[in-house]
Structures are given as structure tokens and as C-alpha cells.
Length: 501
Figure 1: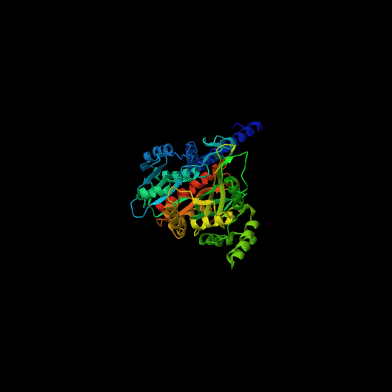
Figure 2: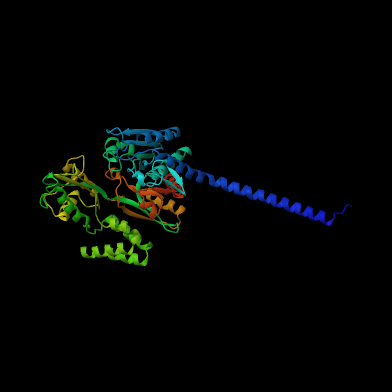
């Protein structure tokens, strides 16, 4: 029998060990490949949403003029091949285009609607570090106007509906996707759409923009605010008149329009409306109690137990002071807000103008009427000769009637299948998250459905931190790539639960 030497034996052992290691590595690699393949669908869906968002940002839909026609045509090219029924309704201004895609169900349940606005606010281009309409991806973020507000949400909602179509999911109800126009202070928003094409957007319940998926500094999500009501955006014009003439011979103080307007605006800028607790904010603060710090919980109890206006003012100020990180949000939730946004006067540097005008934007709590805000502004400025009027294409009385109807609309109930699905599926992604119904401190165009008693739930469907929120309507607006991917899964899972057979 042939006998191996020690060296040959060692070589053989090493060779067999190497072969075993190689075989094991193939098995492990195969396992990794299998795991990667199993993770691919979710991962690729998120990537598709990011790609769609970058494409949507590239359409400059700044309002004004709010031209969303090209974006609507692009969405048509994406939805029609999937078998969706598509409508595009262009408003009388020839620019505001509402895009609607519908997936048909068996009709056993009423439709579910996902609505997101396609128009965005203008940019101060020179203050951006990237091209605001390029959809730039860098450092884990997508930059661009609308990335967070609200083309990010539009992309998430659109991909959720498209995925149902791609997977040929049997549906018990129609699924409607709406890309809205003129949400950013335009006159052909969903109110116009509902008036002219209500049958296309009628639903059992709806998702829209609104509350925040709040992400802490450690990256965890513990609170998801879903808005069930909005503050109303009401804009007012203040107009002062006075003597006009040559700037070399100024008139006495108080006789020139600019002087009078400046004096009035100084008083208005120093004015802070009273603290109010309305049903929507009371529900929000009660829901916050179990997940708040000991100090914040104590402040909230003091607010909820206030016996008079003096107690309310003290409790509101303390709650804001003890929570500086959330101070701006809490301040806005506790009162009507008044902000001077535009000032206009004069025709030439050496001419004393006879007219001066300022634009003031207010956000009204439910229950506050336009007439009440006009009266408050007049009390604050203390000049009865300054005209205060609503900025509206309607008559002043028609506008007052509209605001009166809207401010009395009840909040959306939280006992619906859609709200429950949002809650259940959020916990699959953010296990420690608590869903909290709240009032949106800004405003949306969800009123078109609330006026028809259709529950609407507002959400920015991705985790947000303080930095992201601070850039909304500002410079270098952005949203996290991972946030978009997480939101994609949340909304798709929620939609599938409420829509499938």
C-alpha cells in the first residue's frame, strides 16, 4: 500500500478543508442570495418611489402660475398602461390640471381615495445649494421643491395605487388616486373639482396631507400625528389711505398712508391671539398624555383643567416654554395665528403714496369665523379708518358664509377601517409608534370632502425630523430616501388592507 508522507498528508487535509470551506461559502452565499431575493420586492418598491419622486420634482409646478398639465400627462403615461381609468380636468385658467386614476373593484364597498397636491410654492433660487427642480439625490436625501411638501407624498400615494394594479390585487372597492392642482392658495383647488366633478372623487374615506411621522434624534419613531381637522387659512388685506404729494414736503405724522399702515402693522406684529382649546386639540392633548414626559404631562393636565381664560393663558405659555423643540407647533395649535406676509406701497421714490396695503395670512382654529378675525385685527391695530377685508374672488359676504360653513365642519371620526389600518400597519414598521389624532396647524384642501361628510385623514407619509420640517416652504427642501421607502411600505400595506377582497 502506498503511504503518504507527512507533507503530502498535510496538503490533502488542507485541500479538503478548503473544499469544505468553499462549499460552505457557496451555501452561505446562496442563503444570502435567497435573502436578498426575498427582500428585493420591498426594496425595489421603495426605489421605484424614489425614482418617481425625482421625476415629479423635475416638473416646475410653482404656484403661481400653478401649471400642472405636464405632470398630469406624465402620470397618465404611468397609470394607463396598468389598466387604470384616467381623467384629467383642466380648470378655466387653462393651467390647473387635476389628475384622477381609478382602479375598479367589485363595488361591494365604497371607494377609498388617496389625494396629494401637485403644485408647489415658488423658490428663492439664489438661496438653494442645488437646482430646486432637478430632484437631486445626495447624502441619503432627495432635494427639490416639493420633496417633502407634497410631491413626496404624491409619489408614495401614487406608487401604492400603482403597485395594487401591477400585482393585479382583487379589489372590493374602487381605489382612486388624485393629484390635485391649486392647493397652494389657488382658486381652482379641490373645492372647484368637487363642485364640478364630485362623482369622480366621492369615497367612503380618504388620505391627504397633514400630520407628521415624528422621528427622534436617535432615528426612532414614537409618535404619528394623523390630522382629523385643519385650521382654516384666511387671508386679509389691510389698506390705509392718506395725502399724496412730493417727498420733499412731508405731511404731519398720521396723514400719510405709509405712516398709518406701519403704525398699525407694528401693533399687529406684537399681538398674540388668545389661547383656545377646541375639541380637536383637546383630543390631541389627551392622546399625548400617556406618551409624554412627566413635566409635559403635568403641563397638559394644567391646560385641560383650566377653569377660565387666565388659567388657559398661563397653562398654554408654560406648555410652550417647557417644550422648546415643539414650541412653534404647540403655539400654533393653541391659538389662531396672524402673520404679515406682504407689504405694498408707492410708485416712485420721490412720491408720497396715497395708498398702502399689507397682506395678512391667518390660520383659524375650528369655530373661529372670518368676522371674528376681522374684529380682532381691528382691535389690535387700533385705527378704525384702516380697511380690513378678505382676499377672495368671491364677494365679501359670500366668503364670510363659506368660512362660517367650513369652521363648523366636525373633525373626521377615528373609528373607521382606514384609520385602524393606518394604526396597525404603522406598528409593523415603527413598533414603538403611537397614532395620535390631531388638528393640522396649517391648512389643506381636504375641506372638499369634509363638507360632504367624507372622513379625511392627513399625513405626511414618511418620518420627519426638525431639520426636514424647518425646510418646508423654505430653501433646500428635502426628504430622506429611507423615509420614502418606509412610507411606501406603510401606505401600500394600509391601502391593500382596506381595498382588497
